[in-house]
Length: 231
Image 1: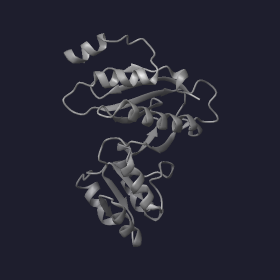
Image 2: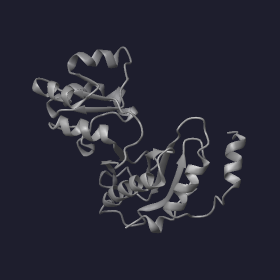
Image 3: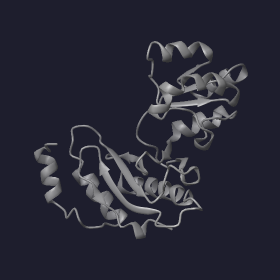
């Protein structure tokens, strides 16, 4: 992959083999986010987990103190009074069975998070093949299968993000936007790492966090000193 001149210059500006403390890494990532749009600051954590074993799967959610900087569109599957509750809470789309063909047949996916009440999971389950690969299936561990739709919608709108292992046992999560202050990014980072450290599987014998990289959408990755961010 050919990299642009700005990327090449950014890489030359610091030693990519170095391990940086969080404060230094955030400052570098912000400095190197030179694209014409507000880049997302991302954290990529390589774990020692083996996601093939259920007890070593990591999945959860955390509300970032300063949000993600992104407007999140929420779809709620509910019925009866819960429909009205979801609308009142500020959900962007609310409905039930009538939404299935729209998603399945028309390819409608104009939403970022799906919330469902438990009594709707039989209906939502039919969308598994569409929503599953996109990471959009509601899940109790992420707080997106719940009767408390008001809290779910409020948390998501306030900056709740989900973290989970991918197939290569890496966690990819947004930390905020390059336009955030260093303090805001640090607050979000600490909230994220607190949740991820707590999620360490009890059955894991070896090293939990093997490496961590902070980067912006178009900028180079900055390696973190993992001994400083693990508990």
